[in-house]
Amino acid sequence: MTSNDAEFARAQAVMPGGVSSPVRAYRSVGGTPRFLVSGSGPYVTDVEGRRYVDLVGSWGPALLGHAHPAVVDAVQAAAARGLGFGASTPGETELAELVRDRVRRDGTGPVERLRLVSTGTEATMTAIRLARGATGRDVLVKFAGHYHGHSDGLLADAGSGVATLALPGSAGVPAAIAGQTLVVPYNDLDAVRAVFAAHGDRIAAVIVEAAPANMGVVEPSPGFDAALAGIAHEHGALLVLDEVLTGFRVGPAGWWGIDPVPFAPDLVTFGKVIGGGLPLAAVGGSAALMSLLAPLGPVYQAGTLSGNPLAVAAGLATLRAADDEVYARVDAVAATVSSAASAALAAAGVVHAVSHAGNLFSVAFRDARPRDYDEARDQESFRYGPFFHAMLDAGVSLPPSVFEAWFVSAAHDDEAVARVLDALPAAAQAAAAATPPGQ
Ligand SMILES: Cc1ncc(COP(=O)(O)O)c(C=O)c1O
Image 1 (spheres, rainbow, N blue to C red):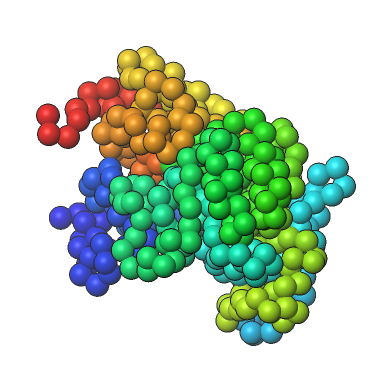
Image 2 (cartoon, rainbow, N blue to C red):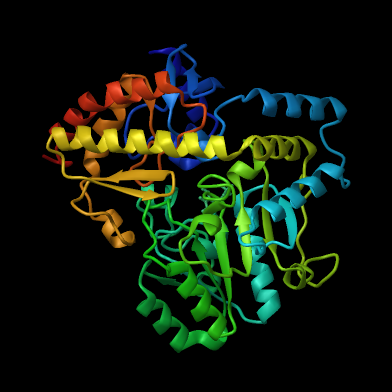
C-alpha cells in the first residue's frame, strides 16, 4: 500500500467516504483520490511527493495559482493581527467597495450593497430568502443541471457532485421544501415562459448560473440571461444571478461584465475567487433590496465567521492582483489547453465537443456541445475515467468528474502548459480505448 492509499484508508475510517466534500472521492473516475500537502503556482504536491500541474484550482478560487506571494503575505499579516473578532473591520468595507466598483458596466452595476458570508451555499440561500422576503412569494425556479450549493431548496436536479453521483436530488430534503422549487431545462426560454405563465404570481425568483459550469460547461444561448430577467420582471419576480463560479474568474466583472447582451439582475451571488482560497462569499444587490436584510429589515441572516479578517485579506489581495494582464493570461492558457485537448482527442478518433464560457471550458464525449442537462448527460462519460487517470499518471491533475470545468490560472506558465500538452495525446488514446461498463 502506498502512503497515499494508507492516507485514504485512514480517512475513510473516520470521515464518510474519506472526504469533506463528495466529488473529491473520485467516485466517477475510480481509483484512490490523491491526498495533497502543498501547492505553489500551477502545481500541487501529494503525500508521496508527486507534483502535478493542477487544473482543479481549488474548484475556482485559485485564479492567481497556489500560494501567490501577495495573497500569502496579506493573510499572514492579517493573522498576526488576530484571527477574528466577531466585530466589523475596515477590510470588509474595502472589499465591498472593491466588488461594487468592479461589477460595473457603462457606469452602472447591480451591486449597491453587499453582505459577506462564508460559502457560496450561504450566498445563494440568502439571496433566495431575500427574494422571498421582498416579493412575499415562495416558489423558486431553477434550471436542471445548475448547482447553487447544498441548501434544501436548490438540490433538485442539481449539477456538480449531485450530477457526478447521478442523484436526482438529495435524501433528507422535506417534500414541502422541494415542492417550492420548479426545475426547467436550461437554454429553453419557452419552458421558462410556460412555467411563469402557469405559476407566475407565486414565483419569487429565478436563479441561474450566470454561465453554467457544473454540468460541464454549457454555453448560454445569446441573450439568455437578459431574456430571463425580462420574463421574471414581467411577472414581478426577481432574477438571482449566481456568479459564485464565474465572478472575477471569467473577467474583472464576472460573466455580467462579458455577456454580449447586457441585462439587469436583481441579486448577484459571489464566492470562490472573491475569497482568494479562503472561505468567503457574498450576496449583492440594490440598496432597496439589500435593506430588507437584518439589521435594517425583516429578512434574517447572520454568521459568526462572516467577513472573517483572514478571508477578507485573501480576497482583497486576490482582487487587487487580478488585473487585465492576469485575465489575458488565464484566457490564453484556457485557449491553448482547450484546443490542444480537442486536437489530441480528434487525432485519437474520439468523438467529443469542447464548450467554453469565457475562460471556463470542459470536454464532453458527444458529437455536439450540450445545450442542457439532458444533453450533458447524454455522452460517453465512461471515456473520462481512463482519460483522467492517464493525465494523472503523466503529472496533470484534472477535475475528477466529466461534469466539472477545467480551471487554469495566471500562474500556468509555459512550462506547466507544455506538461499538459505533452500528456494529452496518450490520455486521448486511453479515452479512445475505453469501453462502456459491462463490456
Ligand atoms: C455556481 C455555484 N453556486 C454556488 C456554489 C456553492 O458554493 P460553495 O461550495 O462555496 O458552498 C457553487 C460551488 O461549486 C457554484 O459553482
